[in-house]
Image (cartoon, rainbow, N blue to C red; front, side, top):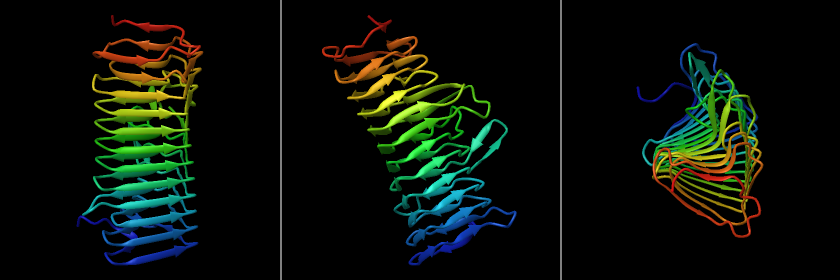
Length: 317
């Protein structure tokens, strides 16, 4: 059966409104807490979904979660998947933590996973932390919007970030705090990652690392694009921002990149635009490092009016 087992199921055309309900799975077999089929509608208010042997909530239809806790589930806290036109989820004031599991060297299961074209997730004032396989993962043509959220201390390793945007997906973060963690034996990690023809937009956000492992604030690769405004990227154990490939591009305006242990801005390849209102300072190795190690670099960095662009180094002529 392509449909997964669940403690509670909302079929096509069905509506489930749950208030102050606790959902737990007691079977040893795989079981989600709540599954919403295509055409089904879920509203959960001040509920908890915990200790399920699969994901806490799986949405193929539509779901609205308010003031709900999703924790200690074996896979994802919330999973929004494509079947038909794609699932849609809205989460407000939710607490999503401690989901997923570790298997050998892999950390699997995230706080929120959005997967497939037509799928969308909107998070507002949510706390997503301490999940094994990443905080918020948006993949394969999906979309996500996060407002006033805290995405912190998720144990994602190098493969995924606290927020990971992959494969032709789009995510916008407004006034979010993203604080990364490189525990679980990982030697390196990214707080935010955008890759494979995807787009990530940050507005008035803070990004930082909090671990001894080598951590990059934001990594852009494989044809992805990044737009950062009025944001602060600081305290990373690697570079604040890294562009890896020739077909990547990033625009930074009215932002701060400072106090990172490697470079404030590192461009191995790709196109970077930085306006004069951006402040890059006090990074330990270089403030801006254009290496060209992975290909051609195109830079449009407005030095006029920018008082601190010291240690600008380029190995490309």
